[in-house]
Length: 231
Image 1 (cartoon, one colour):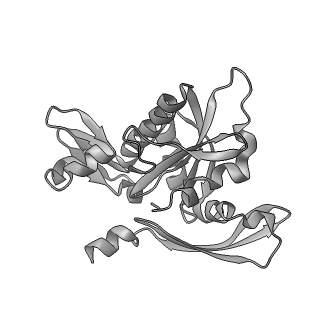
Image 2 (cartoon, rainbow, N blue to C red):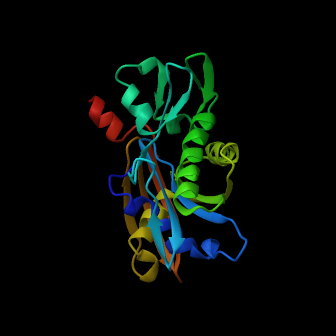
């Protein structure tokens, strides 16, 4: 979602770094920003979060899936590049349909939003494993604060389909607050605007004894950069 991935992923380990304490023989746990437009992944290393580049060397991976002419599945930039010429064979912004019965037909195959999200998650997982040479089994993933139980279960299911155990789902406003270090300061409640590629959150977050809590939240999963582009 974000053009600044450091502000959309590094939050994970700043508040949940204990999950990343890796003992010998343990598998790695990663932090993922599963965005409507772009996604990113980070690991905890040497006491700090580090963004992991994909196979193209980019820190952002487009949340896009396409079917190639030979029937192969394409994920990321390869899929997005096909969208102008093969719109019927390419899916984007499927995060908006998480937790619904809506499906997308690409070529001869039918996918749910969970299926498509799982392909993006699996791609991010593979990027980390290729970059570090270590096996990844768990993840912490952000979700919009207004996601209901059905949408959160769908996100967990997507993780399972990708071969990941979702250790935590963190509200995106909480993630943004952690990224900017508000959990280290006892202050008045913060107003957090989270405007992404496809969703918009406005939340009141409060910090008490280092714990960031969302007091109130509102949002629109049909308002974001994608909509600005179409306007």
